[in-house]
Length: 244
Image 1 (cartoon, rainbow, N blue to C red):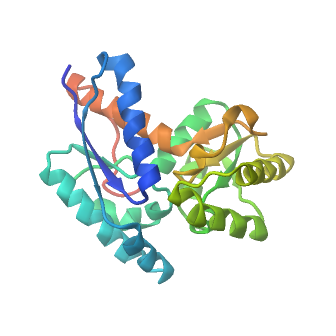
Image 2: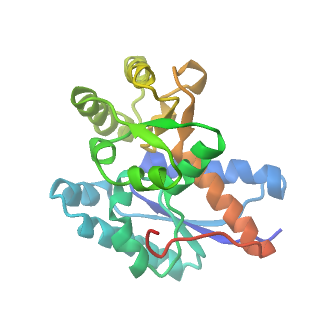
Image 3: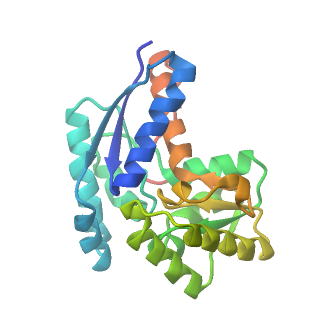
C-alpha cells in the first residue's frame, strides 16, 4: 500500500523520536507487517529554539520551524507535523508561509477530547505552553473548558521537563509529582489531563494517573498516519495554512 509522505518538524529529541516510533508502530495494523508511510524528520538544535523562546521572540521560533518545513518539502513530504506543543505558539506565523499544510497538535487533542466526552481539560506542559495561547482557541472552539496548575506547580513542572525529561531522565519522584498535580486538577473539576509536552507521556503511566490522559504526541502521530492513508484513498483531511 502506498501512502502520503509525513514530515516531522523536530524540536526535542525525545518527543520527535516518540512521534516517529508511534507512526511506525501504529501503521503495521493498517498497512501490514513492517509497513508504514514514508517519513522524513528534520530538526534544528533545541538550543536554537530555547534562545528564541527566552527572548520571547516567537517569530524567530517560527523561522526555525520554517527551515525544517522547507527541507521536508524538498524531501517530498506532503504534510507537516510538529510533536512539540510549546512551539505551536508560533503556528500562526508559520502556517501561511509554509510550503506544506500542517496538522495542529492542539486541534487534534481537542477533537479527541470532545469525542471522548470530556468537558474540562487540565493542561500540562512547559510554563510557556500552560500560560500561552496554544490550547485555549482549539478547546473553546469545540466548547471545552480548561484549567492549568498553579504558579508553583507550573514552575516545578517546567523544571522537570527541561532538566530531566528532554534529557531522557525519568524518575519515580517526578512521576509522582505529575500525579499529584493531576489530583489537584481533578479537584478543580477537570475530567481529563492533556499531556501537552511531548515528553510527559514518557513518564506518566495512564493506568496510575488520577485522570484520563490525552497523549498529545501519540494523538498527533495517529492523525498524521490517518492523513497519509487518506492521501492515497483521496478521502481528504482538513489542514491549516493558518488558524481558523
